[in-house]
Image (cartoon, rainbow, N blue to C red; front, side):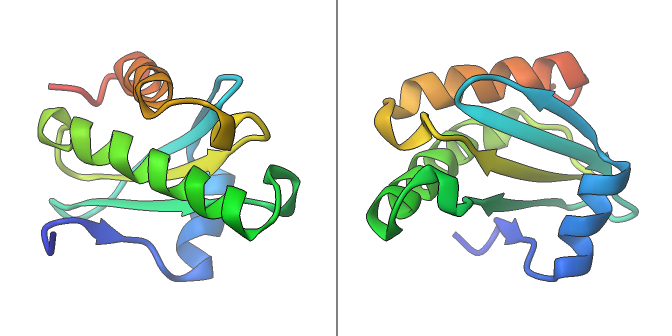
Length: 111
């Protein structure tokens, strides 16, 4: 899984929140911004509103799974931040995947 590059620095997340385009659905918020490299990078945030540790971990897991499924179809050179919402840990990964696909299609980053 070394081909997946994750965002770790706070400044990267902040940059996406400030400059990125956001797409909102009941289960997911997606921030998208073109980066200068030819890489796809992503980060996931789950706030305390999502629930306790187990719920937040599940939310991150289903978001990551949806991203990995769509990864081959995404154009290179973008940064993404996926933000879990309160409903996220309670839905199946297909629901997250559908929402994510809709966001990415609207943004025009799918091949």
